Every structure is written in C-alpha cells, then in structure tokens.
Image 1: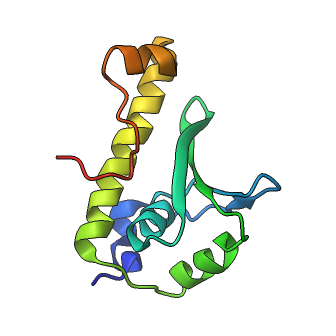
Image 2: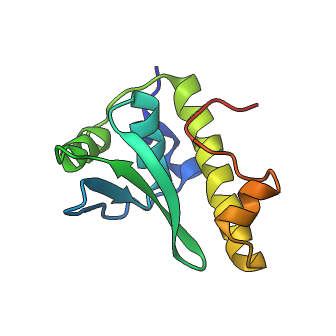
Image 3: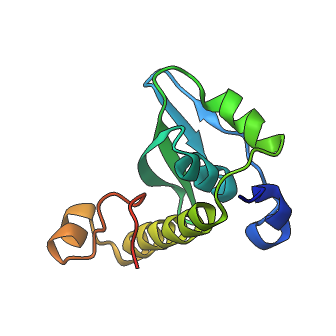
Length: 127
C-alpha cells in the first residue's frame, strides 16, 4: 500500500480545486487525485478532457456527489495499492498526452479511433 502524498515532489504539488456539477460528475485537474480515485475504485472515470490548450481535466461519474469527500480523504492521507496508483499515473499521463497531441494536430476523436490511436477506457490495464 502507498500513501500517494509521499510522492508529491514527483507527481506535482498542485492540488487544484475539483468541480462538482449538476450533471452527476466530479472533475479534477489533479493527476494524483485522479490516479487515487481510479486506483481505489471509488469513482468511475468518464473521460479526459482538455480545459485549455495546455491543461487537461479528468471527469468522473459521481451521481451521489461523493467527490468532495473522497478528495478530503485523499488529502488526509488515504492509502491505495502502490502498483495500482503507479499504473494509473502512467495511464492518465498517456491519456492526457494523447488529448494534447490530438488537439495540436487538429485530429478529431473520431479520426483517432479510426486510425487506431484511441485507447478507449483509459482506466484499463495497458502494457
């Protein structure tokens, strides 16, 4: 088990405010928080979306509004499997990089899928 906060220098220190909205989603731009949420299985990731040309957010399904409480647990030192956390950091970074590359090249999501570059559910295990 790993405490995700022990690697703050490696993962970045910015824990930005997350957003809960009326559409039943929880949105964060914090990579460590997103990795924790996926690794813990507490919320299901819906998508990675660009917030602007240089920054992405991760959108989670959160119909019961649990996101803020889970974020508080994470900030208080919640523990998850080290392997799962590390894997999700890598998967999410790849998903973010793919979104940024697609935006820069002007390739649409449909074109990415057609060319075989779309990886579908980013939360799944990849090697």
